Image (cartoon, rainbow, N blue to C red; front, side, top):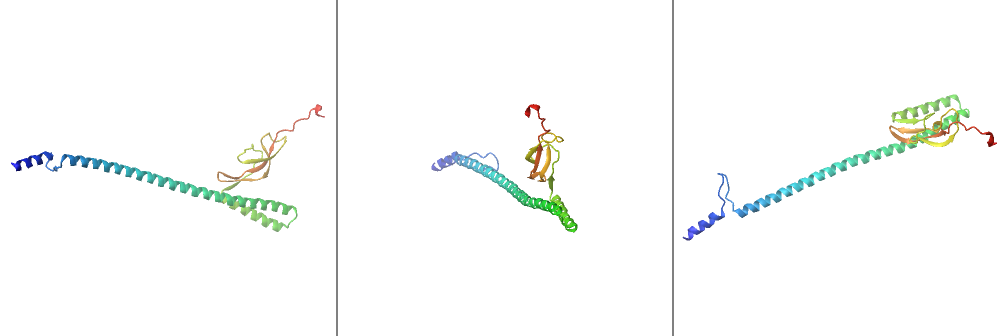
Length: 193
């Protein structure tokens, strides 16, 4: 009889097979495995989320690095071109003064050729000159250094360019220094005397 009781106890702890391939697993062990599976699925989801976040962070860092590198390159190019433009302006002023002081025609021609080569090089670098004349004053491209009355130029328009400005593509390297018209000279009334 003792053997019959052991068999009855073993039958109670076993799950009835549901298919030919089913494995006999005690009920409490199945619950433990289900909990473990749910825990592992959650861990897998957490790790996948961490992976996706790390990949997004890496992608953002790569984009930031590229943007910072381009900004540094652009800043360097602008700084160098700013210095070159100052030399170019000084060369132009020197050439005008030299021609006025009576240098030989051969020297003047040689200096003009150098100046022309300078202009070609700046054009290749996409540096364009801002030389406003009778254009509406634009504070983004122009720097007003003075104003004057001018009967032939409407108020708010450029009368004269004191110093050329320059752009590199769409970026402003230096605004043009200009004299802006205040419009027609006001007429004096007889009571002003």
